[in-house]
Amino acid sequence: MCNALGIINFPGSNVQIRGMEEYRPIGAFSFLGRFRLIDFPISSMTNSGIEDIHVHLKNRPRSIISHIGTGRHYNINSKRGGISILYGENKPESEFYNTDIASFKANFRQIDKCTKEYVVIAPSNMVFSIDFDEVLKEHIASGADVTIVYKSVDDAKSRFIDCDTVTLNKQKGILAIEKNRGNAKNKNISMEIYVLSKKLFMTLVDDALKISSLYWFRDIINEKCDELDIRGFQYKGFLAAITDLTSYYEANMELINHEVANELFNDEWPVYTRTSDSAPTRYYEEAEIKRSVISNGCDIAGHVENTVVGRGCVIGKDAVVTNAVLLPGCVIGEGVHVDNCVVDKEARIVTVKNVKGICGSPAYVRKGDKI
Image (tube, rainbow, N blue to C red; front, side, top):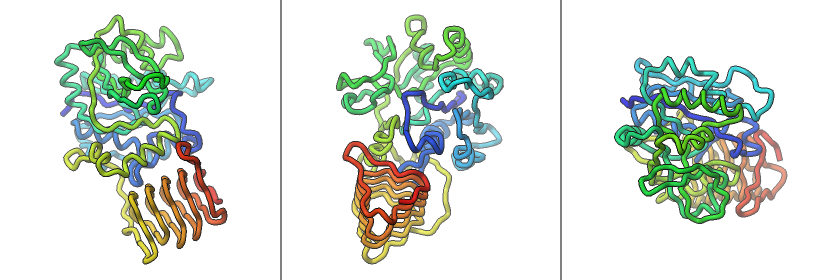
């Protein structure tokens, strides 16, 4: 059992998925047909032996509460631990004040009640699979005050824009945290995973509030780089940072490739999610499927290529769906062509015969919309 409290954090103002975010928090986004984004950090925590988990939310908690439920499907032993959904108790005067620091402070009593010695903080808008117990052991062995998990990438000019980056010295000590402005190819992308003692965590939250009521946790960590021993832990697996609609779309598209998906999914390190007992997908004789991820419960009579299809979708005869992400319950009518799109839950495209986005900038069809 990992001697740590797991905290899943909500993303900052640099993350804006316009359209989708109006209906649910980012952690509740459907991903790759059958998962939610929040499944990935929770699964990594439970697989690592973390049994006390706090999920912090900014707003719109209904879909997360419904999906997480008691947490039993995440293999959490309720006799030894549990999962709690927390949020700031006081409505701020402005969204500027709705920071993770404010949420942590509002829930200090709940955090302090946990008997674990350490805290592992992870984001809800990143897709990864990591052994937090390994990170914690290295953190303890190093004697560091704080450990930040990062991934070295060579495509930072076009991806991970506005994500945090870390500057390292030769001993993997972190000198500063900055934003990725896309001005260099090689960067160390912070995964916004922080490991530290619970005592130091609570002290840093108080210190942040003394400096600025607009500080986020990353700000106080950056402020303390000269004062504390802050180390980096390099992660080498698959990483996707969902910061806008394009990155959400691209992450889904990337994982259609089996070789890429094998970097993330491992039979011995499962990604848990809430199950849905529905019938297998029905493929009609005229259906044609190429290089796609199809969930169960669908009815498909058209052509589907390079597409992620969520549960319970209907794709009519002579319909052509390419390079798209269909969330659960979508209906694509007969003869409709959909390309380079993200189609939100229960949307119906039946009258307009061509709905196409631009390569690199997918079109978005609103939840429940009828086109």
